[in-house]
Image (cartoon, rainbow, N blue to C red; front, side, top):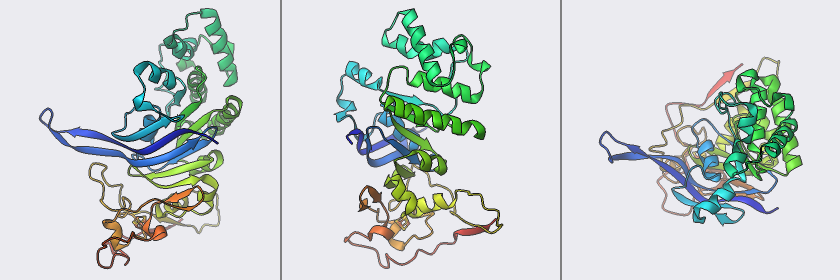
Length: 347
Ligand code: SF4
C-alpha cells in the first residue's frame, strides 16, 4: 500500500507573547518531532487526552498549520515546497469533518449554499449541475432533495453532521480528517454516523485520519493508530497489535480506563496521578515521567527513542527498549519514588 501522507520529524510550536509587543515569553510545543506514515485507503486513528496535540497534528497534515520544523509529504510531495496555486489544488483533495456540527455550519446558509460553497470557491458557476451534485451528495449521506433549502436550525445534531460530511466530500477528496466527528452527538446517533463514514470510505476509496478520545470507536474503525501525549507519539502502528499488547504505560493506562459492561461490582481502575504538564515547558526526559506508574530515575532526564518492537509497532519507552548506551545518572534504572502514587479505585 503506498503512503498518502508522510510526516518527517514534524514539530509545531506556537509563540507565547509577553506584555510588550515582540517580546516572546516562550513557545507552546504543541507537536514535537513526530514521524508517521499513513497508507492510502486506511483509517488512521490518533488518540490521547485533550491538549496532547492531536488536532494540531491533523491540521498540519492538511496544511492549515505550517510545521515549525520537519516535512509533511502528500503523495510524496512536500507541501511546503509547492507554489500557492499548486498547493490550493492539492489542498482540495484534503478535507475535514469537524467535531461540532452546530458551530461548523453557517446558520444563515441553507443546505444547498453550505454544500455547494466549496464548488463555488473552486470556480463552478453552472447552477443546475451544482444542484444535481448537491442532491447526489445529500442522498449519499442519508438526506434528500427535500432538505435542499432548509437551514441548519431545522436539523438534529446527527443530520447536521451528515450535512458537514456532504460538504467535506463535495470536491471528491482522497484524504479526510475526521476531528472527533461523533463526540458531540447522542449515543444513539453515534453508531449511525460511524457506519456512514465506513460506507463512504469504501465507496469513495477515502483515507481517514480519525481523531478520538473513544478507544472503542478507534478499535472498531482504525487499521493503524498513534497514541499521543504532550505533543509526542508514545506508541504507534497496527491497531490490532497495539490493542492486543499495549506496551507503553500511557497506552496501558488509556486502555485500562475504558469502561466495559461488568456488573460484578468489583473492578479496579488505574488512575494516573496529577495533570498533564504544560506544553510551554515540557519535561526534558520522557514527557510522561511525572505521571508514569513505572517511571525509573533515568526517565526524568533521558528521552526515550523510538524502537520498532515488532513489524509496524513502534514504542518510545525505556522500560520496553532499555536505556541508550550513553552517560546515565546514578541509579537510572531504579524505580522513581514520588509522593503521589497511582491510586487504585474500586467501583
Ligand atoms: Fe514511564 Fe520511563 Fe517509559 Fe516514560 S520511559 S513511559 S517514564 S517507564
